[in-house]
Amino acid sequence: MGKSTLKKIRLYAPGIISLVCVLPFLKLRDLKTVSNKIPEGTFIPMLVLVVLVLGVIYYAIDIRDLLWRKFVLKCHKNVREKMVDPFRHDSALRAAVDCMTDQKVMRVFYNVIDNDPSLSDQQNDVRLNGAVLTTIIDAILILSLFSVTYLIAFLITHVSLFLLSTIIALLLQPLFWFLKGRVSKKHIRYEDEQLEVIKQLHSGKVRSLIQDQAK
Image (tube, one colour):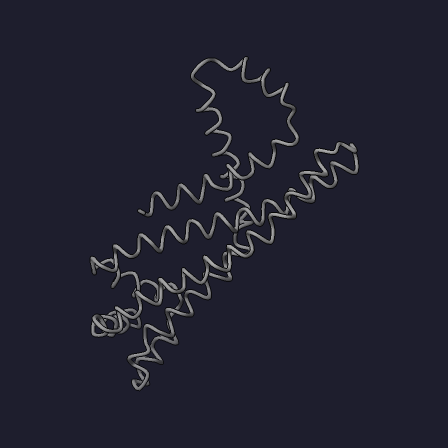
């Protein structure tokens, strides 16, 4: 999976989830009326546009970072510790790494990966796993928001569909949290496999890049 595909998934996935969650507020009769009024051949493009707008709004308000940022920092810490493990007796180099920002440490990590075909190929699996993980996180956050919205709508309107939607949204939460844990562990495992290859084959290059970044 390329970087551009990953970015598209992370933009469109929350839009699709949000659109599905909005459906209980729409009457089937109204949907048919609207779809009949839309010119032939424009329904799909308009649907894509709605999904894109919802995805952009979600992206702009940074809701995903409520759960995603903590995991990213965990990954950065894992890379920082294990990539320099071969140099644990080199106090000067370790001190240099300690002074480096996460951005610089990850720049070293990705530089090595991008210049090793086998690691670059494995990076596709990492990106796919990351796309699945952020989609799960999006589902958790959006369902949490809509479960409250459904409940408020039910208390105001007493429409049973809103109560059913609340129950479904709440029941899905444990499933997505379970999946989040599983996929997070897989992501760290992929990362550790890459770090092991870097440790065995690219320690010299890592040393050189760290020294360059530390200047």
